[in-house]
Length: 479
Image 1 (tube, rainbow, N blue to C red):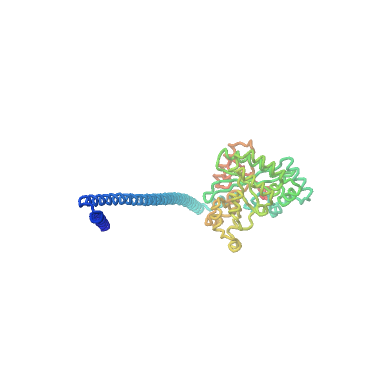
Image 2 (spheres, rainbow, N blue to C red):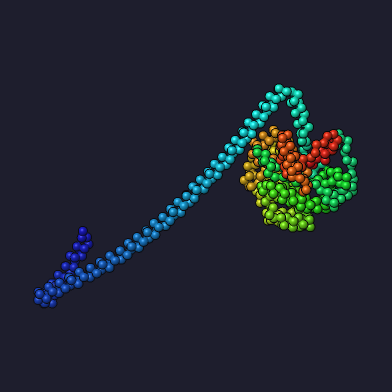
């Protein structure tokens, strides 16, 4: 449709051309034909000028429209790219949610399988108890004999220190009449020097089991010293003397050597087993002794994932610059740490995890003590979950009874240690017969002793003794 402005311009051009011709005819005296030709020429020129100007204006308008279209296309492309990025992020989030869901499903399936195994074990135990009750009702005399036999074979449940260097209770020694005479500091120092110089350092092993399966997962190396008469030295008597005389570092170095040998023997049968080795604070702070230990551990870096160095809680709380640097040097070489002698539950898991701590051993009585709820920053039942978030496993030690195991399972404790599972047992010599050890373990299993079977192939069960000899061995016991 022709615009009004175009019509108006055409009329104006006709009027201008006519006016020009009229002026030429009337004013200039030019004849009508020449005036008409001049008017027509002027009109043609005006039409051409208008057409060219309109074409130029349309071209500029089209250019502006094309530029606007280009800008709109660029904006649309940016929006599409943003939508693509958001879609990719949503897809990644959905994939991570699906992966987390699959992991949770696998965890639930594993827990269901464990519950199934526990139910089967419970059914077997109930069936065995029913059989025992039936046989007891049928033959009371036989049941009494079996009970007496079990009482004779029952392992001592002394409350021992988990490092294995605590002094034995004085009551059994008093009953046996074979208590060692009291010694002076100089005599104890002489006995310790002699034991270190002559390598009279014995290694006992106590297993740490997984709960509730009770499968042996780790061993703790328990150190004991013997004097010239092969009598055990009480830790309360010689540890302070050894630290004051600077001998505790040599003891720790020799124990590390023996523990590495033990670990190599263990890993021949089971690659997943580990050994805990106690290290004193004096060793960590002594540059000379620690340098020797560090060189030895550097040479055995291949065993670092299975060799755990154990320190007291007080040692970690009182680390100085030298101890911190030495601890970092061990962590850089791949070694992990454990904390024992825990006296309270005021624990900072993030700080401990940053320093390389992977295990914390807490006495079962401390975990189950209701007073800890008000004195600690976290409820004991939530401690295992809190530590697990930072890659630290909680080990309940000094477990003495089945009731404690049931209560600890409610706290989600994964590992346990104590006389309920097995006491510390002496290391079998290198040349001992494997056949004899296997036969001994089979005999122990037939007697229903799960404690002895826990250290199969590593520690030999102590011989059966009665009277004063048995009491003397208990007095020298795991502490």
